[in-house]
Image (tube, rainbow, N blue to C red; front, side, top):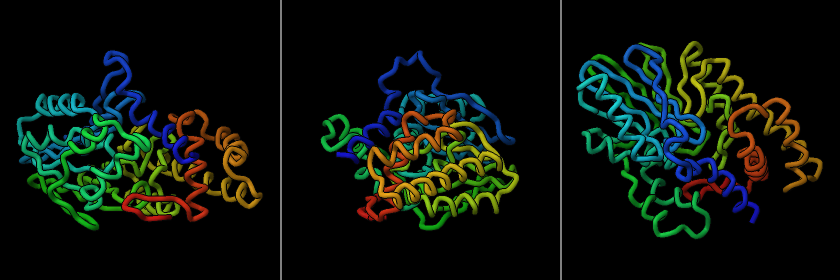
Length: 313
């Protein structure tokens, strides 16, 4: 029951946009973060559900993620078409969560080859069902079943080319086990997907936070001056990366202390949440994810957490 309760809290952020009037929030705003490189930043509670973006090269366009809403994906395609008539060559899914890949069909129909880590293809139509609780409706099952899967997959990474413009796609662990970043070296821009949340608490339902911290160290080492486009929240740089790392470190530290003191469940939440709130209470999604972040991380530290693909952390 505890896992079900915290799952519903997490789900409220993921899908709340579908319950709001369309006029209440814009789907996204576009920001040019490098020459021909655009970040589509979705405000909290937008129907788009997450950030996305696109890169214009010499002979085509690569899109990064496709939102949780087909209308948002169509609007992103229209925004691309207002800037270039070059073909849509690639769509890269940064991970398997449906808020980043529901619009895949829009770009497949536009000619894109969909590319992702192999676990995206393996898990998208199975593990996404958990976001609807133990008894998904027929409509929810159809939503997950209808996700358009990547047709090109990789284990550790792949290089994509838009003429002379190179995109380096790397699989890195932490958020889901299916995560990738997309680096554009000539512009020093990195799309991180949900491996970085810009001034927002993350969804840890599938996370391995120890590996995630190592990944953030890798990003800081390999891209020390980069502009980072996160999966949720604001465009970031090294300071934002370090701040997010600090949250995961503080979370693990405070929970480990609480567990050592014999606390669990709500007692653990009551002990840890005030400590987090002092530093991170102004971050986006704090009200939604503080409690599930504590409980999921406690399960991880105790070796009881279920991960995608039937794994246990």
